[in-house]
Image (cartoon, rainbow, N blue to C red; front, side, top):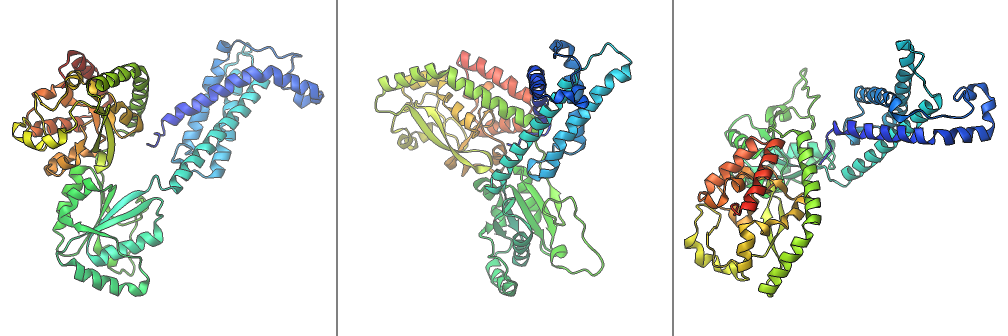
Length: 505
């Protein structure tokens, strides 16, 4: 995840604190170095340190210098646009922003004694110039490093968005040509297209023949009919959908809007007449469109990016610390499983579906017999959960140790590794098995619009009391619609209580 721009204020402030402390620490050594070279005989150099020996002031008496300089530099960098996306920052801007910000901060600090008419305020010019040089190097250096890092990731395709095209063959062909000529594959990739006509293959052949003399790129892979868009948005990693609305027979557009709305996918609706039609004097203006297309953009409501960054930071720190502190318990549980059921593996690998249909492998402590999956069909009549999820209160496949682990949710602890990697979050909807997803109703799939989690509202409200899958999903959607960091913290606190009380499973 990209770090929100506001957090770079903190990073800049940290760089300036380090630069200030370093300047204060090294100022005596710098003075000795200057004295040993003999250049202090030059009047304008000697003016930097009029006293024969540098005597540092207490840090608490100089903190005002750091505060004023830091605020001045951050405000300047914000106004100058230095907190935009790093991949778009030019080398010239970065090389100039650090020195100019440091010079401006130095100037403002130097004006304070004059503005206050207070002769008791003492300023060490050696300290100020050392701080200015150190801050310029620090601000410029780490910006160049970040720009290089993000540029390399962009070049490797980490930030490329997958585009799905929906429209008539002629429109899709035009759009493919447009992407090939105007859009970098490092930013956007055409994943495929959907047909909007039952007999579109004939029209497709005609469109390709009509455009063959233009050396158009190969037609995108056809992934099915537009009626299957909802399923495709879950099974394929689609970031954006571009629907080219035809001049006639465009009833399918309303279904595209509904599917993208339910699953939280950005949708661009482009009128076909603006693409294939010709104008003499009128021109289409779209200066603020990322793809420079004349489109109506329907974007889903996004969770606050700063809060999402904090959520990921909490996930990373808590899961990392948890894996270390709970390692003795991991060893004890592993030993108990091996002693009581030596033929069973310690960890159970489950292949599940996460956000936007992305599959990943999660881990839990083994709590069932080796033939649990084979015996599932013979126990299907005892299923206590309506819907695609299988649940039995007193499941005969569970081992004795597994029953204890499930009572206190200890079998879930290895999922901290999935949280640490970023596949899951501490709080979020339960991930789905692929065979469960095939039986989901369309509205159920909206739970996959966010990252899955170890716990959520269904855990703290007693998942052992929930027998209707619709109620379970309803809690997940309630969480999605009302998400906040405070809600996450409340769920985590109540989860700890439910685990200790043994009521969460």
